[in-house]
Length: 217
Image 1 (cartoon, rainbow, N blue to C red):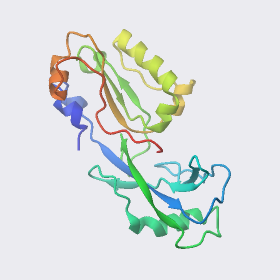
Image 2 (image 1 turned 90 degrees about the vertical axis):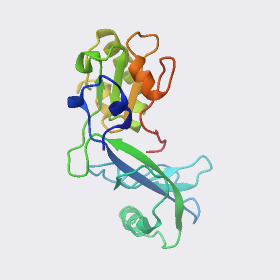
Image 3 (image 1 turned 30 degrees about the vertical axis):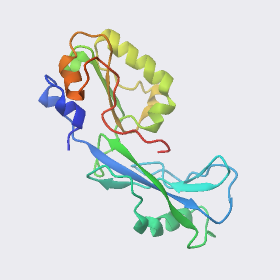
Image 4 (image 1 turned 45 degrees about the vertical axis):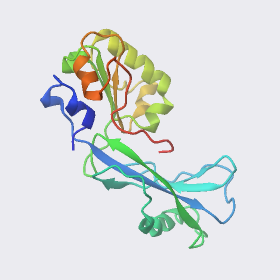
């Protein structure tokens, strides 16, 4: 499927339309006490950081996310995946007992590439690429991009000023923003955004996201 918002913006080039890939991440909560005092990360996979142990404010433990490729956005935890969680967790915590995990929550990571593709860095795409004045797209940015938000903001500002298309500089901290979710940002007070805002149902230019963003992924 194409990113919904891009396909609804008048004058956005058809040649730049991208197919969207959705990687759902399920989390399970541990209900057998507080086994860890710090985060525990396994070796990452091609599609994500692996099923790791993360701590809530009260010290309780959640495990996730996994990677479940889906065609539609939905946030129900797939309880049938719990056996996969036990197997993954036992790689670094062999003594976890069956029956100690319960569904917690799930989130969606919009990706630029699918299960068969190589992980892609994000793209910041300005008017020089798509010829829609005042429109800057941030594509393929999930939690690593939010972690590096300061660098992302400065890169976005440079793109909006230069009307160009920027990608991560492998020599800078922006390189850590590899990942994947799709955000379309409409800059305010620009004369050429009527069609973009009509697609959003807005009478005034605004900031917006093209798909729901989810924390904890």
